[in-house]
Image (cartoon, rainbow, N blue to C red; front, side, top):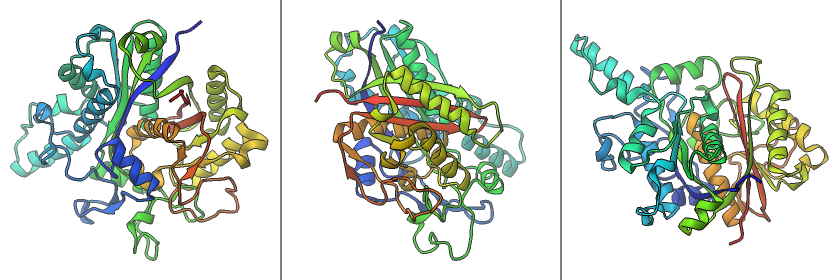
Length: 419
């Protein structure tokens, strides 16, 4: 029988707060972290609405001095989330008991340090000099997040850096669990960080009509917090955000040996590929991904108490995801609570599914479903999206899913552990 895998630590750094507690409180108090950002001026950016982690990262009072030479924001976000999750697990109190060669690191990102690349290119153009910082390449590569966490937290086990677009964080959790299940590690620190606010990325999403565009009379004109509105009849594109999320996974044997407190059980998971389109989701393949995850977890559709949605606030995704939920859950679909925290947090791309996994763990612990903000009913999307306020519920099993460009999908099934 396979060793059980538990979540023993979780964290998030988001536009609602620099730690898990403030992020969770923002979610259940129905606050939005979306603001108009002067840094995203109209002379260079097609959209100035965004979710920034305020007063954090390179050059700020909350700069991580250990990695100050690498001013790529995704690194600072990932490092903060990693340290917080490790501390939340209580592992900083077990320094002498941990086999550091058996602590895996799986930390991903969709874009990595493109902000550093853009800054260095602009600096070189201003100086009319081809030279760039010697820290550009180290700071830009996606696996540097795991590398810096390994270096400064002294974790030397297997390492990977999934770059699976908007599914990167969920893939990190799956890969970490696979290291544990294979017997290659006892602990796995898994997650993702993202900050991709460059003109090319923002404007690229805008011109492909994935990002909420500038439109006179939009309800975000008077209230930026209403810009991201998953499953709403007037959804018109996602709002870009930055952030990071992390989970610490442990085998059952490690939990007992180290005296750790299980926060949730990772019951099962699945990943697959659409093989369909560069950006459009494939309904049939995503249905298969969700059904496989539940089968691997040993649960049926009727056992799922809450579905934490990908829910991007785009016309295509939210319609497709609603149909997918109906296909998977059938007669239960209309009774199943569903919500997307992207209404409050925006879309942090590769980090989003790591943050959503962390929020799902907190939802299990608090027995509370975070709401979908800014929802206006759409006759074609007729499920229970838990609109506008949190809901207390008996939560034993949660399914959280993510789908990325390139047709990359993952699903995690998390179960409650006795308190």
